[in-house]
Image (cartoon, rainbow, N blue to C red; front, side, top):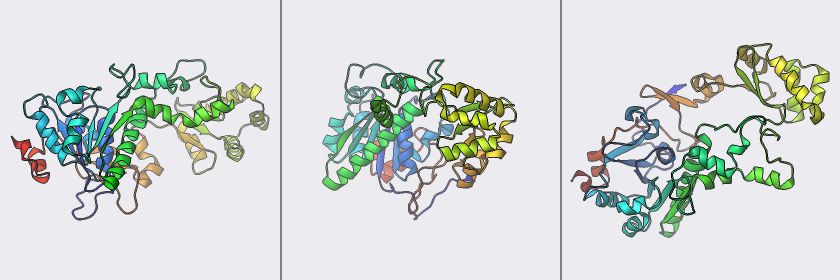
Length: 380
């Protein structure tokens, strides 16, 4: 694990160096999307409101605020909207995560911002999207996963669906699609001088993530139920097994050559290994695999499979993950400002992302941004 918090001076700070982003403070996928842009070098100014917003995490520990600068603006005050419009006039991208219509009521909606800056990319992050029967209703990650069919695919065949934290909805279907959209729109704006609105809805993103599964479903090779398919735990050679110490190993030995290596290292009896070709007896194969894994601890099995093509890995906790030898060698995690955290990703050879600033306390950079963006209205 590396230790990083750099100020690279004249060196490039990432491929988005020089791109200005205004982030209207919120929680969840909007801040994470802005963090990703900031990690890649964008100058992200987070517009915090008096009193703050968050999930009870102290600002100095909220990693989604890293690499950003913060200003305080009360959008409900007389000059609040004008101050944000002044920033939008100087920005390339603006990101907001309000319910539909809220930004308009505050006076900083897309029409007002694009009137000031026709080249602006206005990114809108919501769960349900800007239109549709549920657009104005509250929601959370689990509900968005539920209606797209994604939640129904997770979990055991004989149990309820299992929520994968908020990674699949908020961040995969939300943040990453918002970033993709605003960068595509930024490319268009720079080529044609025309800004636009990016409507990034988590339900759209998560549905899009299931494209391959829908293709297999259409061929009849995917059963529309949990735990009955190749990639959802329906096969005994793609799943998770408990070890003697109550921990787990993940098995993904799908292809025959990987399976052969897997059963050899597991020392599975040949008659049990042969059950791979008999789906009607996969329950017997699963039981045999489970029995073998229960004979050793997770760390013992890790040593057995380490460096092989058996496609087996230990199931680690969040606290253990930074110490995995492969992740440590790659610097997948880093320590900055006293906090262990994921390093910027993905990696670029010429203009890599960096950690330049710790999480920004609300309002810490008001004077600095006013100077750098030539926005004296921030100081009024």
